[in-house]
Image (cartoon, rainbow, N blue to C red; front, top):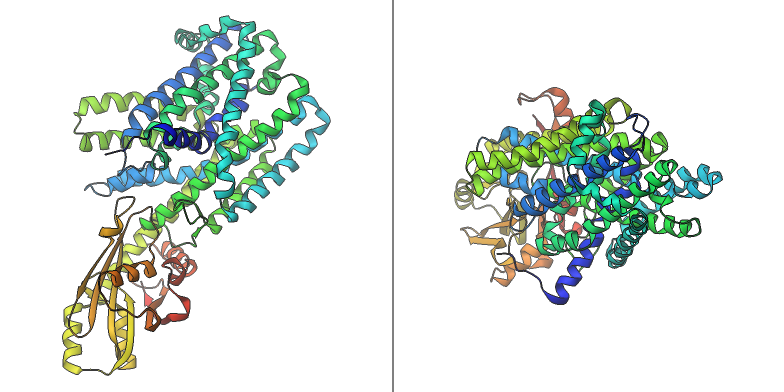
Length: 620
C-alpha cells in the first residue's frame, strides 16, 4: 500500500520531482511549436492553422500525458516502481510471453536512443537563442553546445548529489518564467484561448489533409518526456508527480504554447523562433542562460535514467555486468556507469556535429518517443487484463484509444527515417541485439554448466568417503544454483586434493521485484562436512554485495572469519565452436561481451586481495 506524503515531505518530494521528472517535457516549448511550421509541412501561420496546431498540442498533452500516463499508466507499478523494464519484470512472471518480452525489450532499447538525442536537441535548441538577437553569434552555437555537453558528461563521475538539490529550484524558475512569457502575449490576444476547443484540431485535419497527418511528427515533440513520469514513479510516488503536473507544469506549458501562438498571429515572422521572441531583446541573454540550465537538467534526468535502465537490465540478465559506481551514501539510486556515460557522450557529440541544428535533429527525435509509447500501450492492455482482471472489451477499448493515438504519431515520424529517423532505430536495434544475445547466451551457458555440475549431496557424500585434507579457514564459492556444486569447487578439489575447513556455497539470484527487504534477503543452511549453503535474493533495482551478505550471515550466528575467508571464482574462456544452438556470429558477440564484462570481484563487491581465480576453457 502506497504511503501518501503530506506537508513538508510532500512539498520536498514535489520540488525534487519537478527537477527530475519534468525537465524533458518542460523544455519542449523551445522547439515543438516552431517545428510545426517547418518548410516540409508547407503550413502558413494563418489563424485557422495556428488555432488548429495549438488545439492538437493541447489535446495531446491532455490525452497522452494527463489521461494515459498520469491517470492510468502510473497505476501499473511493480511494488511501487515504474518504467518499461518494471513492466517487463511483471511480464517475466507470465507464461507465453515471448513476443511481449521482445516488445518490452525493444521499448527499453528505444529509451537509449531517446537518451542520446534528448541532451543533443535540448542543449542545442537553448543555445540557438544566441543567434536570435545577434546573428553573428550563430557560428558559436555548435561549439558552445559541444562544450556544454562535454562538461555535462564529464561531471557525471562526481554524482548528482551536490547539484541535484538545485534541479527543482531551477525548473521552478523555468516553469514560472515560461508561463509568464506566454501570459504576457496572451493578454494582447486573449482570443487565442479559444484553441482549447478540440474542434479546431478536427478542422485542421479537414482543411489540410495529408499535411495535417505528417505535422503530428512535430506535434509529438510537445509530449516528449511523458515516459519519464512513469519511469521515475518509484523515486517520488504518484502523488507528488500528479500534484506538480496539474498544479504547475501543465498550466505553464499551456500558457507558453498559447503565448507563442498569439505572437505568431501578431508577428508572422516570429514563426522562425517564437519561444525566444516572446521575450524582449534586453532579457534575451539571461533567458538563454536559464534555458541552457533547464536543458542541462532535462539532459541529466535522461542520463541518470540510462544508468538506472542499465542497472535493471544487468540484474534481469539482459546485459553483461558493467562497473556501477554509487555516488551517494544516502541515495541508493544515485549511480554512475562509466561505459554508458562514455557511449552517451560520444553519441550526443556526434549528433550535434552531424545535424548542426535542433530543427534537423527534430526529425530523429520522434520515433524513439512514439515507439516506446506504443509499446507501453500494448503492455498496458496485457497487464490490465491479467493483473486488474479487466474484461477484454474494457481493456481493449482504452488501450485501443491510446494505441491509435500512439500509432498516428509513430506513423507521422516513420516517414522521417531517411532524414534522421534512422538514428534511434539503429541505436535501438543494436541495444536490442545485445540484450537478446546476452540473455539467450547466458541461458544456454547456464544449461551447459548445469549439466556438468555435480549434485551437492553427491559431492558431500564423496567428501565424507574420501576425507580429503582440510586447510584452516573458510572458502566461499559462488554457485549458480543452491542444489549443485559449482565447477570451480569441483576443479579445486580435483587439482588441489584439499578443501578449506569451512565451505560456503553462495547463490545470488535476482527477483522480479524492485527490492527485497533486508530481513528476507538471505537464507542459510548448515550442511554436513563443514558445508554451508547460502541463498541471497536481490531486486532488479539493487546491486548484490557479498560483504553485506556475509555480515547478515554473521548477524544470524554463522561463524565466518572475514579476515580468514578466501573467495574462489571461476573464469571461463568461451570458444564459439561447440554445438550450442546459436548462430556463430551471435556466439562470437556473446563471447566478446562475456570477456569484456565487469569482473565478478568488482560487481559483487568482493575484497580483491582475498580472491583466487581458477580458469577453464569451454566450447559452446
